[in-house]
Image (cartoon, rainbow, N blue to C red; front, top):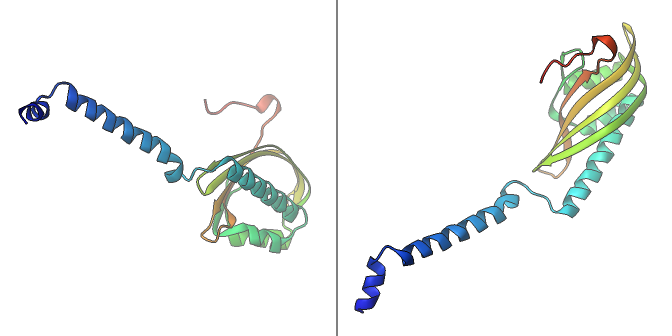
Length: 179
């Protein structure tokens, strides 16, 4: 009995060793649990989600090329918000109305350099779009970088919640504005 009370009262080795093991176990649990709390995907889930996003990007492109407001309507979230290449804000209803009215008519839309990243139920797509279109002011042609944000809703359906486009400058006026 006396020997066991000495072990409990002596700080040196025994308690430090137990403390270290407890910390190591807590750290191992925390590292192992990160994918659970961060919405991590298995490799198969990532592949399936990537395939879904690629299909949705193609559906968006086809909706724009065909002025198909019904198809675009099914892709956009109720609170969708866009920042156009001219810097204006566009709501879901405004985007649909623009497509229905043919204010902008896209004749060619080539997408390249697509990158898709996942953060839990959110997918962020960046791409380069080469566009040939017309609007009320005349031809609209050029290269645009865009970011589109998808969120998987409570029903498990991916919806576009945000979009932003920027014109890619070429030639002597090209400058690097941000470092």
